[in-house]
Amino acid sequence: MTARLASALCVALLLPASTNGRVWETVKQVEARYGKPQHVYLSRPDLREVGYLFRGFMVLVYYNGGISRRECFSRWPHGGRLPRLSRDTVHEILAFSAPEGQSWRAIPAPRAAKKGNYYWASSDKRTLAGFVAPGEVLLFFDPNFHADD
Image 1: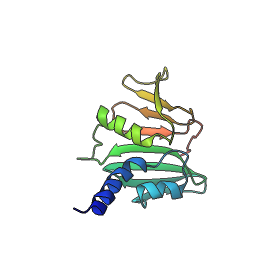
Image 2: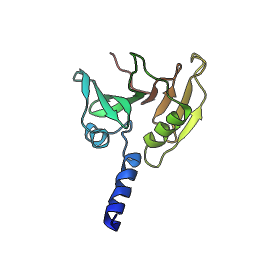
Image 3: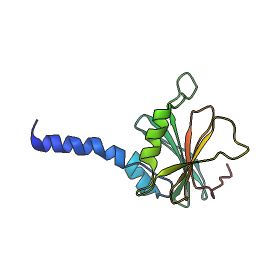
Image 4: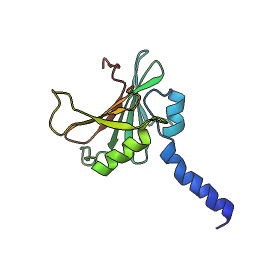
């Protein structure tokens, strides 16, 4: 293997880990990271719900005004059911979904939350993440965004 080919391979392997969609990004930024949508589930002037396939995850992105306001990660269904996400997988998604220069901090679950739900806030507190029982979906969201769907 030549040195140039080895360098290109290293860059290609590192690139996906640093190029993932995040809440607050534009459609163009998200699509540069996830690729073209696999399916548009909802398209209204105020809300678009778009599905992507990325690194073995189904990613559902809600856009409001052309900006990502919610992103949901899950694995592809098997037998009509979503597989549970392992603790390691949740931490992997949290790591690649942190906004640049930000980190996730565990926060207490709201009083009304079910047992087994876990929550995080980005260090700038603009984005929240929730992993809710039974553990099939990891959700990132703008806490001020409320979709009427």
